[in-house]
Every structure is written in structure tokens, then in C-alpha cells.
Amino acid sequence: MQWVWHEPQKSEESPKIMAVLKSRPLTNYIGIWLMFYINITCGLALLSQEKMIVKCIGLASFVGIISTISAIFNAGGRLGFSAWADKLKDRNTIYKIIFALSIVLTGLVIVTGGIENGAGNVALTILVLLLIMAVNAGYGGGFSNVPTLLSDHYGMSNISAIHGITLSAWAFAGLTGNQLATWIVNHFGEWKEVHGNMVNPSGYQTVLYATIVLYIVAFVLSMVFVKPMNKKSNA
Image 1 (cartoon, one colour):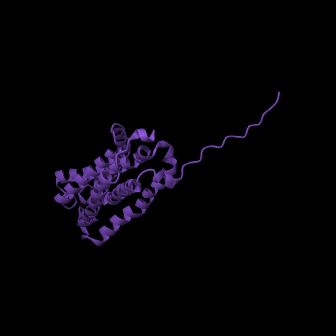
Image 2 (tube, rainbow, N blue to C red):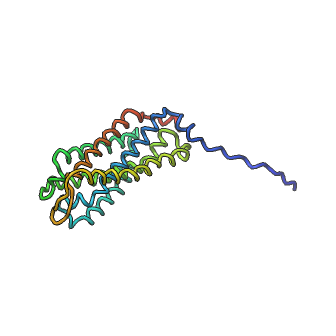
Image 3 (cartoon, one colour):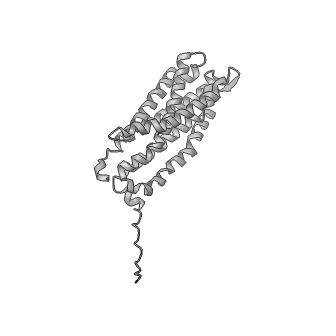
């Protein structure tokens, strides 16, 4: 028996990052990156103040329970928004929904002064809690849908080339979200005692002014820069 040696076939080279990004208008990817960054930044900005906000609306005894429930909403958002997005023609639509919901609830809390006036007011307390849960769900849902959104726009075969660099938005948001909220709370408003806890209601309200502006920017990006993709072209 004669053995014939065959040279091993070379595997196809992974696509270059810039080549993948240039397969569509560069503004499309910039829009996706910024949407992801803003969603995480706003989520961290509010959630970093979550315990203090809960104390501010008079629920200091329930901080642990509310934190647990908000974490459940985070996980539920990852699953729920992903399942919902699978039924939509354009996965970017789920980001529009997340941003729109966040804008509406944040706006309502701003208009009603929910954080400042929530203590002792059942309706405002529920409204603030709804905002916290919605932001948590949107935080999780926005994160979980990034790989499939990239797949829709750049093809599944190209995910490995750009998913890593897209996660840099998460890293930058981790550096800015908490710091943004902390800076605002330390420079705006006035500290006072509410039910035995030192809080800054006006400072927490001011954080919402920053997040609603960012959510509006993200919503505009999702409408203008991230264009619907014909999935057949990326099959």
C-alpha cells in the first residue's frame, strides 16, 4: 500500500475588521456602537443610584428586595426582548422600543418630580419603580441583542471580526455611566434627611435629565443611521 501525503488545506482567513465595516456605510456601524454605548451608560447611571433612589422614595426597608427584582428584570429583558426581536422583521426595531419606553418613563418621572415627591405618594412611587425596572430590562435586552443585530447587518460569518470591537462600547460605558451619575449627584441638588436616610432627591432627578437626552440621541441614531437590512444579502 502506497501512502500519499496531501498538504493540509489552508483555512479561509478571517475577514478583516475594516473590510467588514466598509461592507456597509460606516455611519451604520457608528450608529450601532453609539446606541449600545448610550444604552449601557444610561443603565449604569440610573442603576448606580438605584439604592439611594429607593431610599429617597421611602422604601429603605425594601432596598434588598427591589434590587433582587430589578436584577430579575435585567435577566428577563435579555430573554424577553431577544424573543420579541426574533419575531420582528428588523431587529433594530427592538432598540427603538427600548429607547422609546425609556424616554417615556424617564420623562414622566421628570415631569412629576417622582423621585423628589415620591415618598408617601403611592402613584409616584410605582412610577419610579417602573422606571427602574424598565431601564434594567432595556439594559439587559440591549446587550443581548447586539450579536444578532450585527449578524443581520454584516452576516453571521463576520461576527467574530466585529463583535469584540463592538463590546468596547460596553467597556467605555462602564467607565462613564457610574461616574456621570456620581458627578451630577455631587454637584447638583441638596442633601437632606428622608425617613432617617441622607439623600439628594434633586440630584437624582438631575441624573434623569442627562439620561433622557442620551436616550433621545440613541433613538435618533436608531432611526437615522441604522438602516434596515435585507437579510437575504447576508445569507
